[in-house]
Image 1 (cartoon, rainbow, N blue to C red):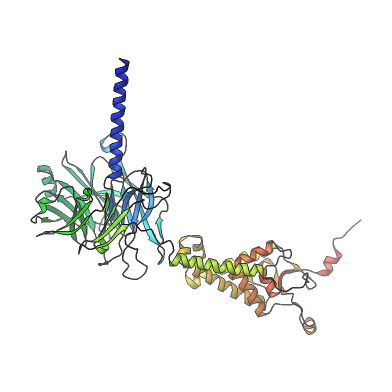
Image 2 (cartoon, rainbow, N blue to C red; image 1 turned 120 degrees about the vertical axis):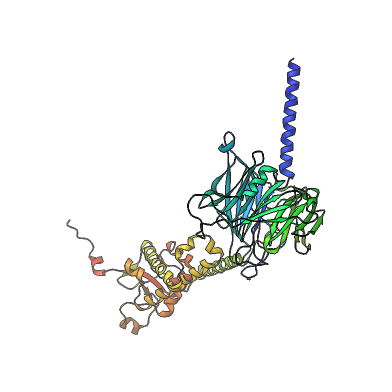
Length: 568
């Protein structure tokens, strides 16, 4: 009996292992979700649109959300991304049920979770945005390293379709057993019901549909009800809070318009074919599981083969690029050389086929291309950094020819480092208050990372340096003080050797205009040299040495000579 019990246990464990392996294989080799942002108002072909898809991460245990940057930049504001290129955005521990995109944002809906069944289950909805730095190839995701969480989507019904509009994601939920269809839209961070046309609900109750899909573009939202002999399309415009035509918490009312596509040959399309809407046209992608991609255009009076690609490998994602009416087919093959699975990036062996839906032409077919790591913004950042480093090295290495020791005029002593730091902080604060009035940019923006890569930080720094150098040069040449030194009770004097007639005619030796300009140019444009003053015995940095100047505080020699009274 014990032997039979152990045998039955082994059989159950083997069955469990086989089922788990099949589930993993399905996740590893099945089609993964993708989405392409549609053309919005004001955009025309060709347009810079974003696309997204999910791919297995290296190692196979996690997944990666990938971003296809715009392939076209008609306004010339930046360089378009190369064909065959996509970039990894963030790792995912589970595969989303669906993706939707609008402009530079992507929305991901994850499988329903929760205790029990029915209304107790909810779906997690997350989003992020992709932002380009100036005209570079560097993209930054907002938020960085994670996705923002939106209000949960009800999980009781099956997610039949997901789209996105101006206000956010739109979801089509269905339960074929109860003939229940619901359309909900996220408005002001609240999922609100959208009234569906009664003929659609009645047809679903009477005979049902082979498949339901949801699409959206700048003209509105589209509910596609597919049957073998015809496609019924319901189009309408969902009220938007941003446009001011959505009020209250009641269901959103849509003026639906119905159209039917029943051309000859539509019944030959598999019900499992992936349907897309691009450039106001309908397309169906079939046979993708057999390493062959056949794309058909569906119109009111014809079905035509738009493109066909053979030998693409195991297809992982079909990614629409609406701005160019293109299709990006991403497939994978077995990696040749193992790479550290912790390193994010395109999957080893990933292959990309990029083709036109208008002409069927294949623009690119080959391995996935990595991003160019150096764009103009990054080059500017590195170039300015190298110039500052070289200038700093030259100033630190070169020394002015000064005699041994520094002799101050009678009645002066070197200002303490703390006093000089306070004076510098006050000068920077005064200049920082003037910069917004001149340029409109705040100095506080320098603490953000984005302004350093798009070039705005360099403009603000240049204005600060020029303004600070001007104020310091004029103030020190004429009065021996800047506003900060005046408040800190210190001043700048010249320690350069003087002629006898100068010694007799001038009470306090002031630096000339040239010396003041040299000192302030080194201080403001090569500001790290100011820190050298903290390590110098006299508290003088290279600007002081080249200008033969010193920051001092005055004192009365007679009071210093008398010293404190001693009663004993």
